[in-house]
Image 1: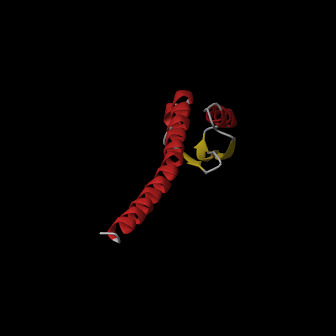
Image 2 (image 1 turned 180 degrees about the vertical axis):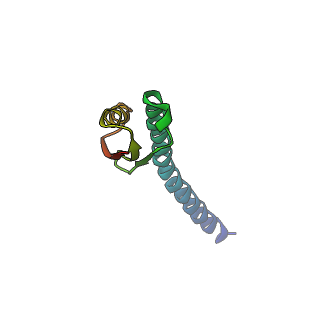
Image 3 (image 1 turned 135 degrees about the vertical axis):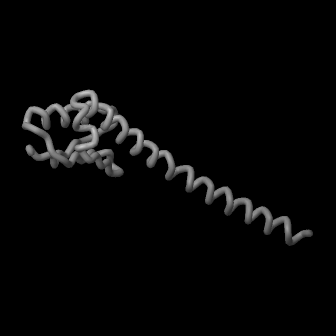
Length: 99
């Protein structure tokens, strides 16, 4: 009995540490997914036809990269401005080309 109590305590501490490290990683992933949804929503507000024509990528530093095509430069400017208006976005990189 004297040996099982310390072993059980060590096992519980290891389990708690493992659970804590998983919980710290999860919110960042949720933040990126929520931010991507917000950016896509803002693009849809500007031009509904471009919602799925523009690929949205968000890195760990909250930089957004937009890739795809648009009909003209004014449309690109509106899409980039919409992405910049999302709360938490640090920088928007545009790889959108005029088709």
